[in-house]
Image 1 (spheres, rainbow, N blue to C red):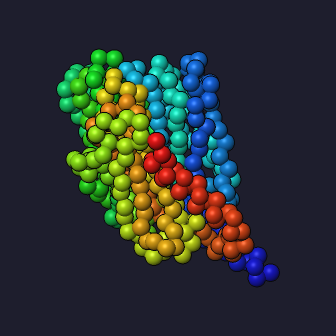
Image 2 (cartoon, rainbow, N blue to C red):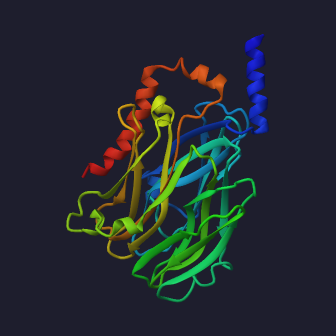
Image 3 (cartoon, helix red, strand yellow):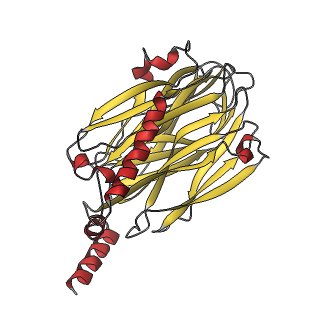
Length: 353
């Protein structure tokens, strides 16, 4: 009787969204991974994949998408979107829409689902009519917008991820999207999109993550960090050329390291449109009990000439309601090792020719 009452109490508190109550889960979707229908597609190509949460949420979560890896063929216009639908406490759908003419043989998506009263996801579609300066002209061009959110965030932090775009590059030497976020206020954040040469951005789909949760670590890296990076050196085109990033995290990330939520995705890029296929990738690993450091590697490979790349990351320690924590204690050691192995493999791929 006591156990039932305790579970009901936690569920009600979760639905009310009291301070400190959080549930976070994360995973990877590899639906698009060089299968024939993506290598030799018939446009438009539309499909979806069902994602089932490893653990059921107490109430319907918010879901954030970000791209960890993407490739499309050189000197071709790109037109694609990814979006979330039918979110329940048990899972959701990831929808893919590729309109060509660029072929996308690889697209790896990281998803983060959470119930957190101090965090919010916004998906914003910038249409053709909105991007007046970016969809035409030449040279360096920019356009400013505002991202608004609820006043419940006293000291918000914001990161952004590209989850869809329509870009014309037929007459451009570069394929360029850069996102600059201003200093957040309690109700809005300024955002600037930049491009250059004759790269014309017709539409953009951006996922914004806003949080004032002190336990969530987030940020953007790249651009300024890349002045002497490895992937500007294109002499060795057989290997992945990567830039590495490390960040110390609090001890809370070490206690139940297999339950950490460590997510990273693509925020911006500047790639030569004709030198080789467009290819960018970012990977991370779990923080294990022997270290309090989060590692991230990002870059490119092959003939791709990458001028700069920006990635954003979100780190959150284990966050489960008490009754689920009791259940998780009975998980086997094999499940923990499998989770660590999968993420470590993603990072190690950056070292494999």
